[in-house]
Image (cartoon, rainbow, N blue to C red):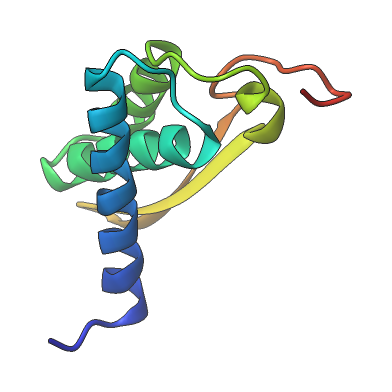
Length: 107
């Protein structure tokens, strides 16, 4: 199977998001890569379902705000940038402080 770089990236995000879902199912908080992947995957799914730009942003924020994360994740993941394909074309979505404002000094 030949994948272009975008398809390969999407599969990596999906795989990490599935790991995040399994981690949450065990009652554990997510680390930064898992939390970011989960937010990105949900935004990709919302975009694929035909949501508007604002709805995709809202989907990402809803997941980020409702997901338990380990201490320090907010300081590490200060911003999430994701390109999604919407009906009007590819758009860049930027979520600032998706997991709250972390300690600027780090964990």
